[in-house]
Length: 517
Image 1 (spheres, rainbow, N blue to C red):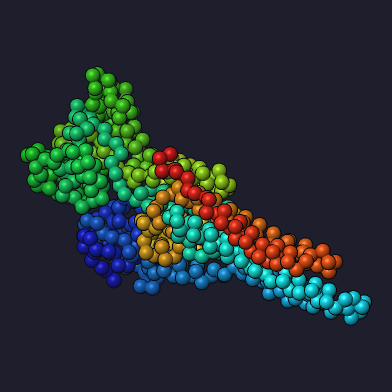
Image 2 (image 1 turned 90 degrees about the vertical axis):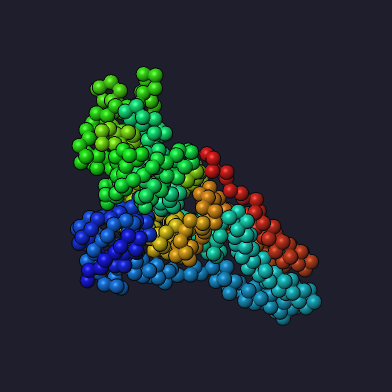
């Protein structure tokens, strides 16, 4: 089948472009923050969005086998394959109580019958053991700790869907993180403006705002928003035309202007190897970084553009028919505190942190180096993220996955613990995940790990302390060393209060303030 996809429509099936050119927003499937240009012969995925041009697509997969359907199936499979953890407490208590009750009966009956001991004395000993047999402190040692941990997390903006997820999070040795919308904000913004040929930054932004005012491209929206925030006015725009996959052109105040990719300007006949930089009092401005052999001249092809691209930024040139007026770089900003949160996770003992993204390798590398993850894997489709999670789970003792999109849902379901960005996350990601960071604050991630780790410690302390105390008291009962009041106050009520008080210590843990670090 051949389907027609008009601007603004979703691509209904996986396929190959037969005719037309357009920029396609692949964020729902791959997580790429910048739309990808598609021309005849390129592959497109079901669920992605045609941003601008007209496309004719030849369908290459059946309805039940397209990318979006496979994502749904992977989520269902991953969730069905997860087995419920059998709680140690439940298994142990099923044996513990009958054994202690039987021991109490033997203590009460055997000595008087076989050795002529005092019936009243050993019946009291038997009753004392029955008091100790009550597993209250032991049984509540886990749930009271879990409730304390989950309640504390909720007060601090972390929603945990169950006690098993709280325990599992504290035991993971590796953490996988999505890039777009998780490490980054998922919103494009202008990061650099490099004026050329004696133009100012305001001149470049004014022209760019005019050119992009009629464009529907997300990069154009970012430039317009930045210009508005900088209080840069817009020129009069006439004869606008969008050249799909390359750029835009229009008349600004009666003069022809262009904005687009460096390759677009090469096609227009510009020599990008030697462009005069704007100077300030005879000194090249700090934004003009890569100088060629000529005085006050930039090599855009070998210097400025590659350097900006190596930082994960998308480069847009702005110019007239006669000169290039400037360079604008646009990028998906890293979330405040992301770098500090990753460093804090390392400090807390997380062995390996990896970034998994559908974005291109150049952008992924720049972000990975900036935030300090141990490893990154780029250009991943949802099923490839699942395979990466499985590899990490085999290599390390448990792996947590943090993501926000539909494309992250299978990986969230496959991971030991799935964590969704609560505000930015899609409904699918939130439904699939075990934990949600409600304010999209990555500083809550180290807090969550520390809370979970401490909760596991408190649970172990409660279990073994309650068992140890009851065991020691039980051994002393047949020898008359433990009166019944001690069994009540220490072995029963006392231990119950003790494990509850110990669990309440979890409420003292607070998130670090990493947002401004």
